[in-house]
Amino acid sequence: MIPSGIYTLANDVVFDQLVAWLNSVEANVSPDIPICIFPYDDRLERTKAEIAQRPNVFLFEDEDALQRWDDFAKRVWLSHPRAKRPGSRSPWYLGHHHRRYAAFQGVFEKFIFYDADTLAMKPVDEIFKNLDTYDFVFDDWEHRKPRPVAAFDFPYLESTGKYTEEELRPSLHCASFFASKQGLLSWQDVEEMERRLVEENEIAWINEKLWWDDAAFSNYLTLWRDRPLFNYTQSDNPQDRTGNCAVTDRFVNLNNVLYNEQGMKPIHRLHYMTVPSSAFARLCQGEDVDIPYRDIFLHYRFLKEPEKRPKELKPPSMATQFKRKVQSGIQKLRKLRYYVPGLVN
Image 1: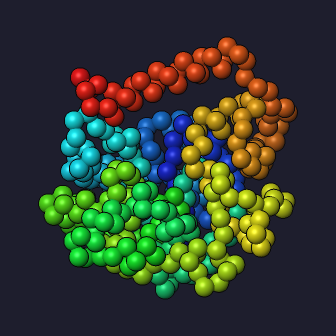
Image 2: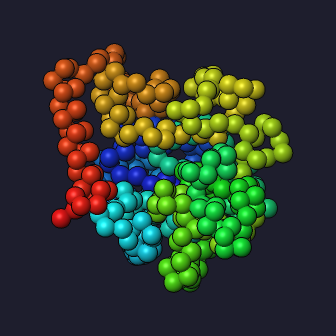
Image 3: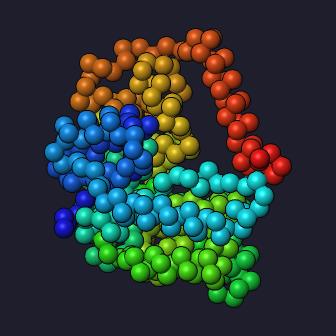
């Protein structure tokens, strides 16, 4: 067992983001901290080649644990009210996002999980220290989300008499960045959660609009586990309360490290949520793609290979733009087959 380390979830589809994240961890966290990558699927050729050059990075190899989490997520999804509607499918239905929770059966006694579409911005010693007091540590503003997009179905939960929205709000969090401890969730615990979610219909606690994604499960998990948690965005120390989202928050760049624009507070990470991996791939190939803080992304992506960084960024040709519009239209039609009743064979 390794005392502490960092996890992420990746494959070759997010290769450019993975390399940028690895370089940011080396530069801003530690060049020696152990890093374990959960394989999202079998597309790993480039990922394995990159890992071979980094002695502190390795793949998670417990395939049984990964499969058990895949199976759990699928079985529970099938009990979700939305899954029972004709023609309804979740984009997470056949995905592997829940593999991140194999961290609880993993190799680090204390761990931090980062989504791969992230850049690390500061050391993590304080986070590991907080795990001496708390069992879960987060850093997000999920608790501020309005009812329609909050993790839980508050009206339903309040109707059961078990919880109130006021009680639950402070505990809401995201799954893109969190810290916890190995063994905090056993396989027996996972089986009991599945029983309660399915047989006791606690899946109905989850907001139907969110369906059954990794963040929804993360909130159910911490509520079910009922262990002390800490969220930096609710800290008594104002220096802890910062933004993290590349798309919505404003930051100041000092020597390729970002600080919260208001108060110049150091942030834990920059999260490129909602920006597709294809946009990063095109950017790294020299296309002029409008990505927030793209210069800092390119800095970390090519930190070890500056000669490969595009010398200039050029817009895509008209033919390429037309082709992408056609492909986008086809993809939307395919999604309709899954999401609209009556369009499913």
